Image (cartoon, rainbow, N blue to C red; front, side, top):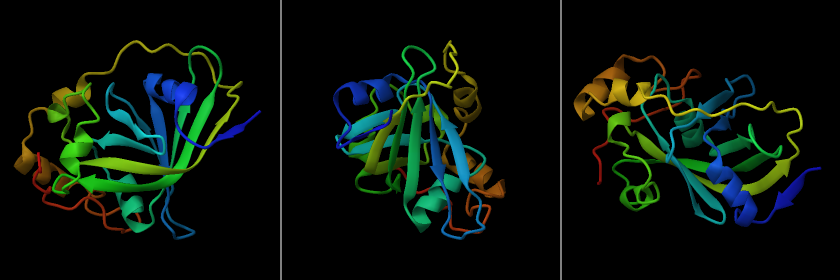
Length: 195
């Protein structure tokens, strides 16, 4: 049923790049800490960097759990499901890190996302993931669902913000600068962009 892959290429790469949505899962080291599971979307916000590295754009939101967990321990799992076509589930288990806007690597990494204008979405960081284990499973129980289009609400909401107003917005949110469990989250004020 399930298969392990040495790299992200060929049919596997094509599958994950075609999916309009994926999920991320992270957790703190504390045994009683809060596990985080997040859906991710917006066409063009995910990229395969090389055969063992993937990345996605981390946009404005009301918390920063993934960033906090990655800063503490780096563990992350990404998952894609086939909601159309043949059944399939792909998971990339690996080590991740938030690459913030003032990081010298930020500009080059941003070049992997030509299919989206991140400006209206309040880009906070690029999440860079190195795969330790890549597996697929059958997905026989995943239902058929249709993808119509991306919602435009995120761009409308955050497109009217600049760095100062985004920093102020994040400063008012309880779980941006630190996680639910008190781990360091997004550095505030927002680091200046290196782009």
